[in-house]
Length: 196
Image 1 (cartoon, rainbow, N blue to C red):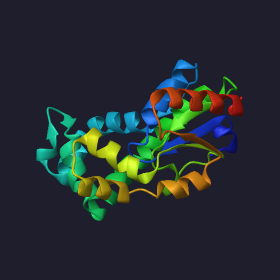
Image 2 (cartoon, rainbow, N blue to C red):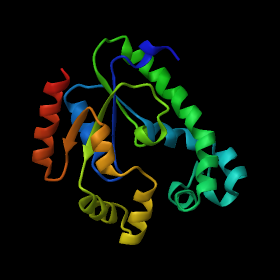
Image 3 (cartoon, rainbow, N blue to C red):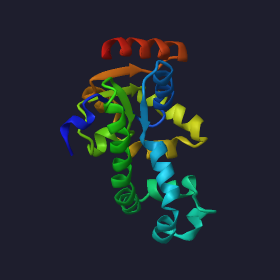
Image 4 (cartoon, one colour):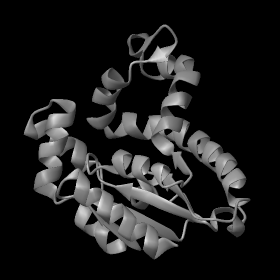
């Protein structure tokens, strides 16, 4: 893959429920282009629903759509299933991200690629990264509220990811989302000044 591919790209990452989507939306409001790896994954899941059904069972697909919550249960709790799904999806996700990036690179200005597992997987030669940071305790609370789950399940979901403190150390830019939306908006504006 050519090095000039992600010249203007900034990887946007963080932990589960740290507020990446909200930051992404705020960046879009400021006119930044963004690529969302999760959205691409959802689209690809449905496009490959036949493969999913034969890999994991018909009960995970309904009317050509993958039942993501149901599939998630056997993916998060089982390493082998997780690796099987990743082997199918990751190359396809990457292909799609590369395709969209080529279009964005032509504009010659910074854009963001929202990649939840950017540091865990390291599939992308993107030199700059932005981490949306929330202290762990708050992350657990937000995840419990968001997905309506118990603390135990929230911790299992989080254990699939690198510790948020470690991500914070690795990042070029950090957005602190441990307060309210107004504070988050200020953080986003501060980061935009740094980037531009």
